[in-house]
Structures are given as structure tokens and as C-alpha cells.
Image (cartoon, rainbow, N blue to C red; front, top):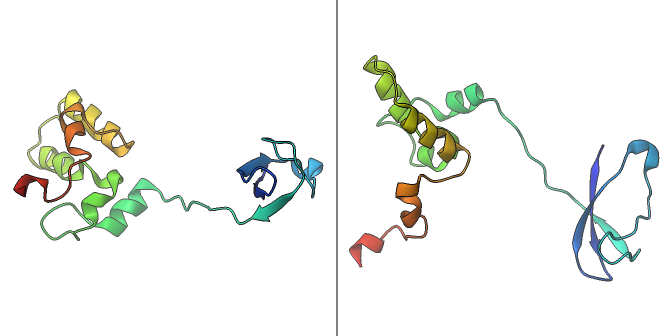
Length: 124
């Protein structure tokens, strides 16, 4: 079922409306104010890649990665995982948990204070 996005000229809200193909209505009502003065807008879209494709495109963790390598949260922890693999050591579950949380967008508790810090805050 497609989701159509509109701007309501009555309440100025941007609204998303889920419609079955069989129930398509070219003139829907605004779910916020029930007004019918809506204009269809272009929706954003996402391009999903498999983790293996992301890793191929990013390269192996190490010294030769691009400066943007660690800006992608899906790459967080790859260097640590590689280090444990190379040393043939089982990674502790707490580290695994923190890496997965970071990949999901959640910073470990020990780093949450740094989230709002600027890049040069240590020098002020």
C-alpha cells in the first residue's frame, strides 16, 4: 500500500495518507483538520543496501579508510570486531551489545556526554 504525502493549505500541516490501490481517492481529507485543500508533494525515499554491500563499499577498517568511514553508524565497531577476530579472541558480550546499540543509533552511556560536544571543545 502506498503512502501519499500532502501539504494541507488549511492547517499548513504536512500529512501522510496510507491508501490501498483499490481505495485510492484523488481528493482525500486532511487527517488533522479534515480540510480538503490538499496538494500532493513528492515523498522522500530510502535506498536499502545489504550489510555486505555497505562493507564492500566502505572497505576494510584500518588506517587507509576515508575520513567519512566512521560517520556511517553501520561501520561503528568494525575495527574492534576485526581486532578480536585477528587475535582469535571471543568478543565480550558487553562490547557486542554496545556495538549493536551504536549501529542502531544509540550511543553507549559512557559516550552520551560527548554527543553535544563540538569537535574543538577540548581546546577551549
